[in-house]
Structures are given as structure tokens and as C-alpha cells.
Length: 336
Image (cartoon, rainbow, N blue to C red; front, side):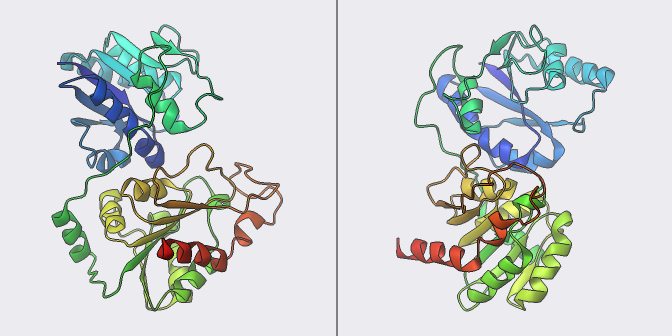
């Protein structure tokens, strides 16, 4: 029975985009045991992916080397007897643990000076594989083999009991359909739709939806501002939930409005009708992987700039993306 260890990326959205790789590995290998080494904050997400047997917490913060600790962790994994490791990050550090674990086949892109450490090194053709999900998924194939299409879909399993428990814990009993606003974006403010726009859209749809604001503790202050502007129909849940709770909340929503963020990818994997708002970033690399997701972007000449803050100071890519623009797209979805 083959055993494969995935070295996962650090971000929630990237982890969602790794799921088609997991599914493809199961298609290729009967009776596969698939484990994932991942940062602690992504563990609840991986636990909603049935393809994953065991999730091992990666204790290292971004940028930390801690060579001795990496050696000890790798050595502790030797007894698991993995046949292959697939290393999704391109850093040298991420390849060290499977090397120290003595895993015989270590697959990944050439990356950061790690030839030999990665002994099944692949050269990435960025033009042939423009999407991150494609770049991950091709690592399931033999070297030089083409990527089979279509890719397996992302899909998170959510238990109905778990959903009910989350709503009860947060004292939520919606009397109308729920519209979830994913208001954060870990990368920086250039990816965030303005507070006033979220609030105005919430007011426009208040007769039809209850609004839930979903995000981390870092988004709590922004959530408070939106709630004050939007009114009593809006509930700020930012900072009150962990990732597992956020997954349950999104699973309970009828419609999602999201910045380009990890939660956008989670909502897509839950197959929720969604408006995905793009400003400084591009759906050409990391789009939401769902037919129910509608990408909204003004496609200005200055975007995508991929900056954390607007280098021109005007933030037109998001400021000029008005609530009326988004409402028009929502109305189209209702008509479909």
C-alpha cells in the first residue's frame, strides 16, 4: 500500500488549491495513504478533505530554519515508511524534512538551490501551467507526463451536526438567507474592498439577506466599522471563530461576497454562489475554483500590480468597483 507525504504550503487558499493534487494521487494509486505536513492554522481545513488520512503539524514559522529541529522532526517520520514526498513550496527549508526522513522519492520543482535534496526535480513551464492549481496537480504525474484534464474539483466535506453546533455556539439563528462577507485579505490592504462599499451593499440587500462578516481577529476592527454603517441586520463574527467555524459558517451561507483571500477559496470549495472581488491581484493565477464563483474586476490599466498597498495612492481598482457593480452581478446570478 503506497504512502505519500505532502509538504503543504503555508496559506489557506494555496492549501485549497492543493486538493486536486490529492485527488489525482488517489486516482493513480489504489489504497493510497496520504498524509500532509502543514502549518497548524491550516489543519482544520485539511480535516475537511477526505483524501487526507493524517495531518502532521509543521511547527516552523515562515522563514525559520532551525536546522536541528527540522532534522529531529524528519527523523521522527522515518518510522512511517513513506514511499514519496511531494514538496509544494519552492524553498530549500521545505525540502529538508523529507530529506531527513529518508523518504526515497522526493518530488518538487527545482526551486531554491535544492537539487539533490529534491531528487525528482521538475522544471516548471509557467506558460503551459499558468494556474497555481495546475502547478500543484502536475506533481502527481510521472516526470514529463502531461497533466490530465479536467482537474478534479475542490470539495470540502462539512458535517451538518458540526454546522448546527457552530451556529449555536455563536448564538446565530438566521430568519433570512445568509450573505457572508469575507472582508479580510492577509496579503495587504490593496486586496480589500472598502469598508463603505461592503456596508452599502449590505444595506442594499438587507430586506433579502442577513449579513455575516467573517474574518480573523485582524479583521475585527474593520468588521466593527462595517457593522456600524450597515446596521442591526449585520453581524460581525470576525475574531470570534477559528478556521473550522468559518468553514461551517460559509457552508450555511446562500451567497458569499469575498476579497481575493483564503476564505474565497474555501467558499469556492464549498461550491457556494460567490462574487470574488479582484483589485491588485489577478484571477489569471489563483482564481476561485468553482463554476458558481463570479470574478468581478475593473481590469484597469494599473492592475494587477500585486502590491500590498496601492503604489499610485488612489486605489481605483477597488474604490471604483462600486456596490452597484456587484449588485448587478448578484442580480444576474438570481436570473440563472
